[in-house]
Structures are given as C-alpha cells and as structure tokens.
Image 1 (cartoon, helix red, strand yellow):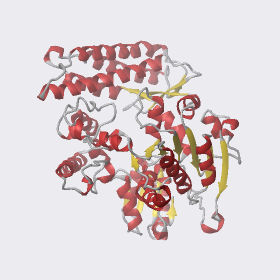
Image 2 (spheres, one colour):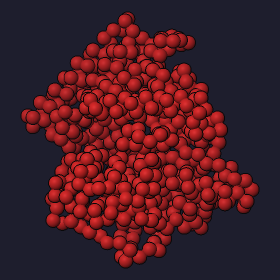
Image 3 (cartoon, one colour):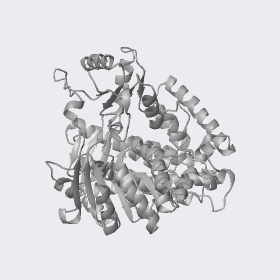
Image 4 (cartoon, helix red, strand yellow):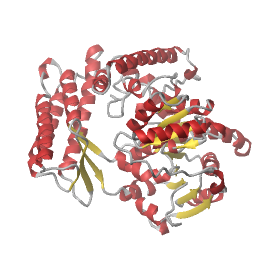
Length: 546
C-alpha cells in the first residue's frame, strides 16, 4: 500500500485502496505523504470522517513518524489539525459579544429540564475560567504562546450543551476583521498554523466545505488523502443539504428583532408571522393528507404560497437589518450590535437561499423531503448525487488517495467510484486484504429473538439482554447506537442494572471519553456509529462491541 500511495502521488494519479482494520493504513499513507511534502514543498491534506481518527493521527501516529523520518528527510516534517469553527472556543461569545450565547441558550432551554440547565450553567462557568487561564498563560493548553482553545483540550466534564454556549458556527462568526477578539481568535490561530504545516489533518465536512464554497477554508494543497473514504459521499451530501423549519424561523426572527435598533423596531415581525403560518399550514396539510412525511417531488400546491411568503419575509428582514447596521468603525455596544446584525443578515440570506432551492427544486437534481413530528417539522433539500460535485471540485484540482476497510462491493470498486463521480479508467484501485484470521479471533452473536428497535432505541427485552452481555464481558463494552437519544436512553437504564461505569457520548469531549474508556478496563462507552471508526482500544479494555 505504501508503494502504491507513493507512486500515485508522484505520478499524480487518483488511487482507491481497501485495507482491513488493523493493517496500518495510516502509516501506509502518512509516510509517503510526509516525504512528498518535505521534498516538494507541496502540502498534503489528510481528511477523516471521525474526530477519534483525527486524534489518533495527531496524538500518536504523526509525532512518531515525523521523529523517525527526520534523519532521512533532512528536517522534521510539521503537521497541524484544522477543525470546523464550532470546535474552538469563541472569545467574543464568552465576552458577551452579540446575542449569540442567549440564542443558543434559548434553543437548549426548550430541550433541557431545570437540573440540566443548572449543570450546563456550572459547566459554562468552568469554561470561562479555563479560557481565562489560557489567555493568562496559566494553562497547559497555552503551549508556546499559541493557545489551542479547542474542545478536545477542555478539562473533563463539559457536555455538548455547555460547549454550544461558548462556540459559534462559521455562519454565526462575525469575522476576524469585525470581532474585537479577532487577533486572539483560536480558530484563526489554527488556520494560521495549518497554513505553515507540511501535512494538515482535517475532517470530511471541512473538506466538503472547501470543495463546495467559493472561498477556500483549507490552505493550498496538491494532494488529498481521504481516510474512512466510504463516508465521503454521505458527508459531502450532508454539507450540501439545507433545512427549513418553523423553529429555526422563529428563533431567527426573535434574534433579528433583538439586534435591531429602535429605528428598525419589529423588523422581523413579518418573518415571525410567516414562520408561524408556515408551521400551521404544514401541520394542517399533513393532517388532511395533502402533504406527507417523506420525499416531495414538488411542493404541494397548498404550501407553495406560505413558503413563498417565508422567502419574501426573510429577504425583507435581511434588507431592513442591513440598513440598520452601525457605521464602520463603531465601538463599544454599537460594535457588538453591528456584529450581531452581521450574523443575523447572513442567517437570513442562508435560510432565504434554502427556501429558494426548495421552491425551484428539480426532481432529477435535488431531493426534497419532510421529516420530524408535530413538535419539530423540518423541510430538507439535498442533491440527488454528489458525484458530479466531487469530480469537478475535488478530483479535478488535487491528486486524491482514498482508503477504507470497506470500499469494494463483491470485490469490485465500481459502485464506490461511481458515487465519487469517477470511472475505472480515472482511478487506480488496490485491495491489500487483511492479515487477521477473524473467524478464529472473535464470536459473532445475533440476538434474533429480540424485537426490532424503535425510534428511541432498544426495547426492555434488549436492555435486559445487553445487561447480561455486559456482565458476561466484565464491562469492557463499546455500545454503538443509531442515534444519540438511543445511546443516552440505554446508558440511563443500564446504569441501574450493571455494576460498571457507563460513559455516554455528549457527556464530555469525545477524546476524553475514549481516553477514559481505554484507561479504565471495566468501563463501558456508549455512543453513535461515529465511534465505530478511528477508536483504537487495544488490550483488555474492549472485549465486546454491541
């Protein structure tokens, strides 16, 4: 595999490699990638589907390899990790800039009970203290004057809900030039570090944004290595999917009204009314049978006009707010309000474009579908195929090496190549197999007598079966569920049935949870299928996968 990757990079040919779990895929592509970057001065981007694999590459594989290769290459290669903006602490939100924290809190308040909110508040205060330590240079995270400030470097015990109060998405970010903390921004510092690195480790979502957006988010590169490549199509589709919901419209309308000055008071009232009408009309149509959950070939006639009204209200709100923006160079509260207005305008534009895409959707290009229940209906639109996008936006610009344990179907790569928008003549393929005799190293148990899981996960019978299996394994269990809710429900019930600690995804950063699972042999870890890849737990800590 190492030879094949090296030849593909040097000859600028795409390559797809299937290699079984544990065969050393990361070493096989990292060695030629590091050598290429150092000898040619051309950067290599390595993309993974999971945070767990990113951590393995950055915390374990790359430090060892760069040290080992330094004598042969003449210098030690450099590497950096670059994540999505919401993985980094936002000093502007922590400092109270804009209404972002309040908006996030409003969304969570609808989902959490009073005890959850109290715990979340305490965790947010811990994050505030941690951030201050970083800025003062009193934290291990401060490094050589280059603070990291990302989710994985947090102290233990901070939930996803708490993190949402102190981070922003790329849409919510006001931009380094507008932000009073722009010169100390952790996300911008990570981008600057990546721009100087030989190898940049990122994720499929950021790779997709870089490929699809008009402005690049990754530093210049000429080689891309895609690990966990079987996930690439789905992650690209996810990034290219847009959503419209009554809840999102209502939250945005209230946020816009809060951001407006007295001169533009009530600027989003039309949007609030249009969103309420849309929500009511959708529910009425579903009840009457004129609209159904699932795919819509076209927008039902009774809903076309209410959706058009939402589109027009979004643009009107955007225009009113844009005229209400404080002048350039504003300071103090005006600067904070200007940043929030900028965020609201961008959100209005994004939702407006999503509605336009739904209204103009062509069945052979986009898929539109309605999902959710009465409390949260969502209308989504996604491309029918991303093969064309990948072909023109990724494979046309870079040499791409794709690898995974599961790429071939019936020994052939044709199906996966087609999903990526390539033919067999456009991409070399290789199957290196696996050195392990899986038939003699494990037991596959299928509990056929159990009922199928429902929306909330495992049934009572399944929980009892899980308890017996966990007890038989002495803890040491990785539980993989189809949704976060199912994992949380199973963890809550099983904690009363087994004498072992059960960690659950979302209760802490993923890296912290995996580290605890690895270090505490009788501990169990529950989560979604994102834990299936990139989690390396050798030895006795992992004996059972459910």
